[in-house]
Picture 1: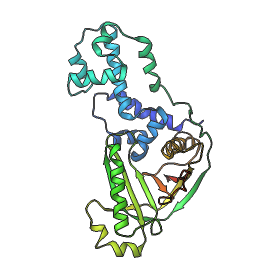
Picture 2: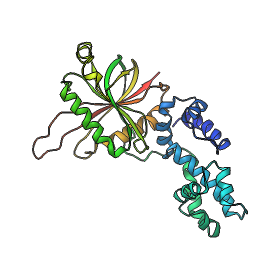
Picture 3: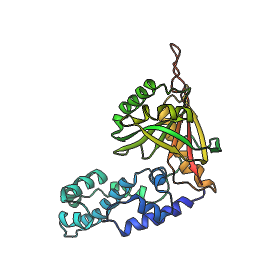
Picture 4: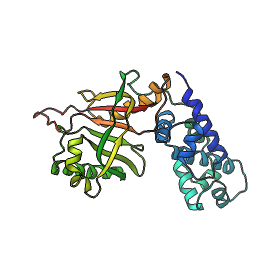
Length: 301
């Protein structure tokens, strides 16, 4: 496997090491790594199995553990200040979450086996662990599309309410699947807080004109654009063995970022990862499960 992305992230990781107490800025890290900012977090998680925030907190905790475990007479307050925490309490909470021991407990009786195990994510790529080691990825061109969309930027558990609100809008203004294509524009990791995703439907010129003075003026409805260009497309479909569409999407996104992209000469474009939901209104026959199909689009230069 080529490690061109590993090499790019080495620059970002070195920057973090040198600026460990500074506020985290994704745009700055993406610039250092020469990677599009809207893909930086997805790439980082796919490669290291940690979010960038979790990585930084773990790195800070490991540095603190060295000071605590080797008898340095330094106060918790001083460690917290040196590592850029707002206060001692924030440091204690972060250290305990990352290391599994409180700073006080670690200073008195450090669990070194656990400490060294915690360092593994800091070292290199994660080896492939899922079953999607090969997949059919198609390079496609897409024309620009205008979307009517709603933005979800909050707790992941509140996503169903956002989806329901958009469904009600589509029903009210007759923008069904026969009128426009259904897209998700993914701006953050699913586990991120807040979770940021745009949910939209494509509008042709006639539909846009019909809604310009009615549906598009409703509170929470925005006009969005899918930029024309080249995309890597990977299709996932549920079946009897794989009935969880979210798990398939996770595996597909992971494959594109961690394996496929690392083996290709393509570069990412600074446009968000997209999902197109292909059968949003189908109803399963009694006694059967609905087959769900989604196309994943990764923007390429």
